[in-house]
Amino acid sequence: MNLTRPVFYLLFLWLFFPFTTFGQHSYTFNKMMEFEYQDSPGSKVTADFFLMDTLKGGYKMQLFESSEPDKWLIIFKDFKGSAFRTKLSKATFSKVEKVNADCEGVVKTQRLEKIKDQKRIKDSIIDGVVCSQFDYTLKVRRNGSKVKAHYSVWVETKRKTGDNPLFVNFGENKDRDIPAGLVRYTYCRYNDDPHKYRIVRYKGSSIVNKTVVIPADCDYAK
Image (tube, rainbow, N blue to C red; front, side):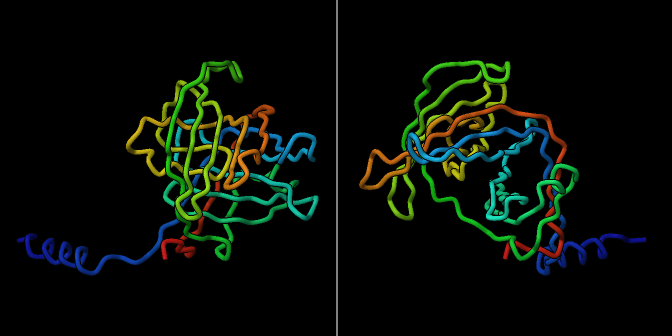
């Protein structure tokens, strides 16, 4: 039996009539870090949690206090620009291992930051792991504002994913050896006011076993 012709037809269909189905996407998390935030010295202290996978890169999830005290505001984003936000009971989140995204909250985002400067400061010990501290200066292309960021990274990872606790995705990550930022201490965003900044303190971390699932019918690529 000659299989050349059937294979040719299959290849033709694959090239000129690509499948439009959207597969399910799953993201795992094995570590959760807690941070405290202040918009200025003496202001109200708020907390949020940053979840990541120490073995993988390219996505992150944050838990914020929402307007409903018993619920988390969950914001997820991967490096390719896919994101969603939803609210979930704190009690439910602590019990479940899998969080299913609501299609209504799934969106496509764009990375706007561009690295202008990178400076290594010193090494330190965080959670018993050697970390390297860096200063970054970034420029946000949309409005021209600048971001001053100071944070620490795990020396062992040296990933180029641009992961960090705040919504900053490094557009030049493929061109520079930029490690994954995991612990941020200070954060400054300014236009006309160079003294406006945000204080961020690392509080600690814990081991978790969570998975985020974006169902197949949530085609956020559109």
